[in-house]
Length: 338
Image (cartoon, rainbow, N blue to C red; front, side, top):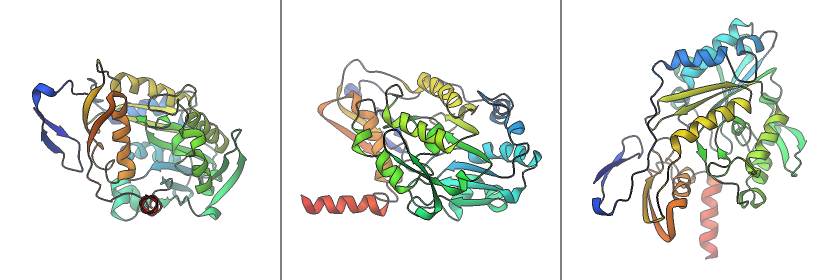
């Protein structure tokens, strides 16, 4: 049996013994939007839980638009074009709009990567800046959360008169689903915030898992942090396995996000009759499989269907190696211990 795994930019064809294959799990049938631009404009004009962005922008002096970094295949250029048009038509000067790359604790994105993320015209004509999670003085302290997490958020976002986030909704190994509040925490949060939010206090909870929101402390915590930081408007997209838009949601940070989550559940959830001995999977291809840190998501996604003591075979390009210098250092430190 010949299958193609998402791997790097090119894909990876592999041969599997057909008599041993139980099932091939993939996206359920969902038709890509026939006219993504029109569908996007429709949700911008009729958002969930808020007034249209064109109305929210009236009278605002400045805007910060948070977008995902290079590790997320969000069609930012498509989304940003009507968003930026709405802001400028409402009277916000181009010089008063900052597009902030939500790097979390990842490396900055520069040069050609900004063109890849935003498109050449937007990258060249707008103020585009990276979040630097480890530079404390670039953050504003907003106090502690009910669970004791110190909330440090990028000051460029905190001080903006209009706060917008643009992201992707898909299953996430800890937060249940990506998108929505995740653009704020960890996207533009400081080191101490992310460190505590990624601590065993949250990650070891049984509900801190893929596809779970109810009772998930990781989701509840960054939702609280997102509310504390403020968010006027989100635009989130759901993509198919070919990175084509299936659905856009827009509006309130929580209501629009949950609307998107309900749709995602219909296209990414599947089952097998019983756990299997071997799962063959991938890190979902470029840009999601460029580091081991990101490719772990492919492994955790396979865990529910592999037998105890079974095997997960994952294909990931790892063109940037392990991940951040800090994450790579952990491997070196632990190898010395053992």
